Image (cartoon, rainbow, N blue to C red; front, side, top):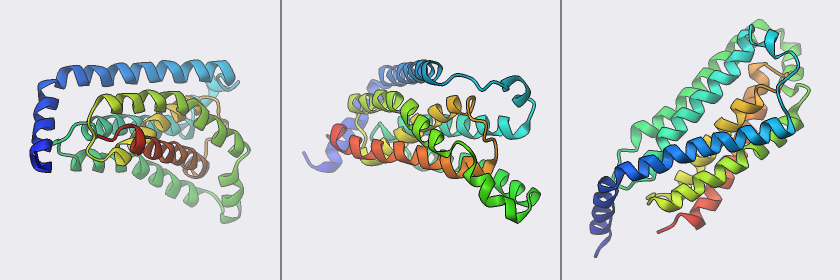
Length: 212
C-alpha cells in the first residue's frame, strides 16, 4: 500500500469513528481543565483583590485572550489529529488570540509614556508567571499528548505544538486569576514565553509519541 492509499484508509477510518474520537477530545478537555484547576487552587489560588480586579478591562482582557487561544487551539488540534481534514481554517484561527493581544498592546503603548514601557513589561511577577503557567499546563499537555496517540495526526510535531498552545491557554486562564500584572505588555511578554515553552515541549514529545 502506497502513502496516498494509506492516508485514504486512515481518513476513512477516522470518519467512521468520528464520534468516539470527538468524545475522547471532549473528555480530554474536561480532564485537563480539572487537573489545571486542582494544581492552581492547590499551589496558588485567587488574587486577594479579585473582586475589584473584575471591574477592570485590563484584567478581563487577559481571560479573553487566554480563552480564545484555548478554544481555537482545541478546534485546531482536533482537526490536526485526523488525517484528511482541512487544516487551513483551523490553523488560521490560531491568529485570533495574538491579534487581540496585539491590539491591547498598541492601546497600552499609546496610553503610557515611553519611559514606563520597560518597567510595565517586566512587571513584578515575571518569574512566577513563567514558572506556574508551565507547571499548571504540564498536566493538560500530558492528557492531550495521550489523546494524540489515540488519533492519527499527519504531522505529529505540529499537532503536539498546538496541543501545547491549548494546554498553555488553559493554564494562562487559571494563572490570570492570580497574577496582579494586568498590563497587555506583561501578558505579551511573559505569558507568551510560558505558552511557547509548552508548545515546544508538546512538539518534541508528540514527534516521538504520536508517530505512525
